[in-house]
Amino acid sequence: MSERILLLGDPGLRAVCDPVTDFDLPEFQESRVRLERALEQFRAEYGFGRAISAPQIGILQRIIAMNLGQGPFLLVNPEITWKSDELFTMWDDCMSFPWLMVRLRRHVQIDLTFQNERGDLVEWNKLEQAISELVQHEVDHLNGILAVDHALDRDSIIARRLYEERKELFDRQVDYFIAPTIPSGSGSFSLADRSAPTLGR
Image 1 (cartoon, rainbow, N blue to C red):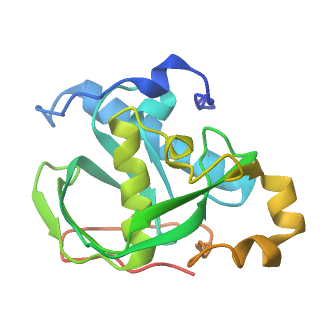
Image 2 (image 1 turned 90 degrees about the vertical axis):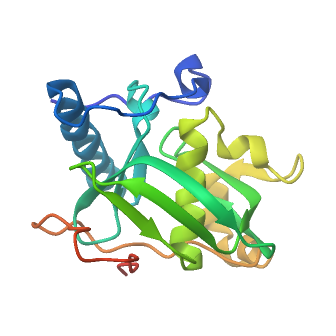
């Protein structure tokens, strides 16, 4: 069964999501399966995509599915608890408008707390830039905020096709650009013994 990802302009993308309070409910497990499936389907179809948030498939819960190259895992009820003063610019993309690129500004590092799919509390401190910008993007989704809302100016939203045709030119306009992750592996990525993630290449 294919999951439909909500596209830019859908009012569902502007909803503020509710926290997950009961990890034993069948509805939570169904949400987990749907979200991980949507992420892997998008990666297979488009060849990119490191994370997806629940509201992007119409689930108004504070859940993010992420794949950094070693299989999907969940961030439930994520909360950014600290942001560095240092900022950087980048071209961002999104599964809800894969035909666009958006030039915006993010914090270089963040601290994050969240629960894994079992409800255990996890803390990630001073996340590296690649993960920091990704988490900021996805947490925005949970609050009804999109990358286009952060565009630096009227010239900062462009067609992906144009970006790909003139990548070197556009990358000179920013401090940082996204590195792709490797295709999803066959095993699930476990958070049980990890204090912070590493980026798959």
